[in-house]
Image (cartoon, rainbow, N blue to C red):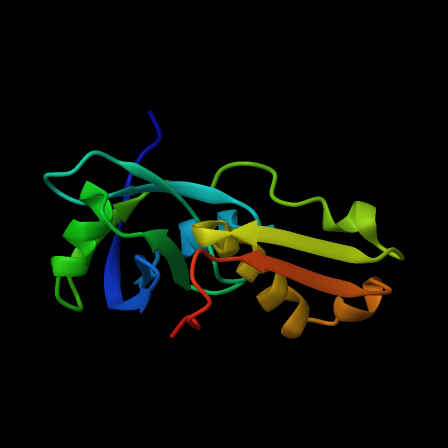
Length: 151
C-alpha cells in the first residue's frame, strides 16, 4: 500500500447538483508527482474508507482542487471539517491524458457530473500554459441532469 501524506484542508464548498469542491494544500513530494491532467489519487480522512478522486487543478501547484459527488463517507466527512484540518493523500497515480498524442489536432472534451474534474485539469492546464496553440480546436461537451448552472 502506498504511503499517505498529510495535507491541509484549505476550503470546501457545495456547488449544487450534489457536487462538492474542496482544496487541499499538499506536500511538495505529492505536487511533484502530479505531472499530467487526468491523474488521481486516494484521499483519506479519519473514520472513513479511502476514496479515489481525480485532481481538478493543473500540475505544478501545491493546492489541489477536487470536484466530487456528495454523499460518500469521505466527501461528507470533508464537508464537515473546518479549514486547516488534516486530510491524507497518496501520491498521484495513472498516466493522465495523452495530450502530447493529440498535438496538432482538435481536442474534444466530454464529461458528465463529477467526470468534469479531470477535464477541468485539462482546461486549467491549457489556460495557464503555452499549450493552447498545440491544438487546432477545443470543444467541451458537459452533461448535467438539470439545466440550472453550477455555482
